[in-house]
Length: 142
Image 1 (cartoon, rainbow, N blue to C red):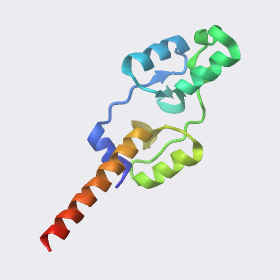
Image 2 (tube, rainbow, N blue to C red):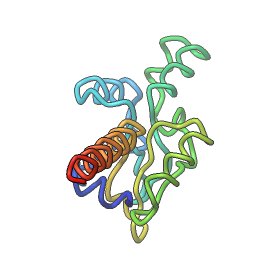
Image 3 (cartoon, one colour):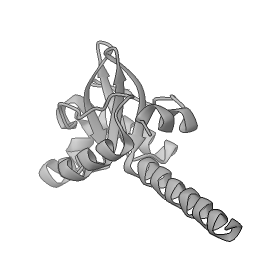
Image 4 (spheres, rainbow, N blue to C red):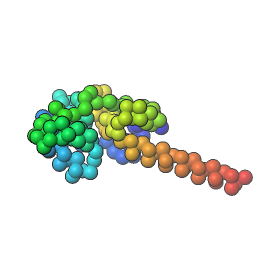
């Protein structure tokens, strides 16, 4: 199964911020949407990703003044991205190896979605449960 299939189920809606947005504005966006990260779009491309971790690290380094900085100054860059045709297992392996929880999905230079590790794990669990149900049905039929 591919990342495109995951996006097909969850949608292609991408909440993003501009690199010049204030960190305090991005924090409000993360909290109001109940999300952990957003891609940072500069000139139509993903320049980085801004996550809860970036906020924490900024606050630890600079204190409350970090909230007045621009997102571009605190974001993680470059963003690690994935192609929509990438397999779910390859994306999970990438996220585990790089210790990240969100992947912007890029097609033809444009961000067409964002997947979280939760999205991918949910898909894997549903897939395993479906296979187990099919196996039980097969065994009972024999």
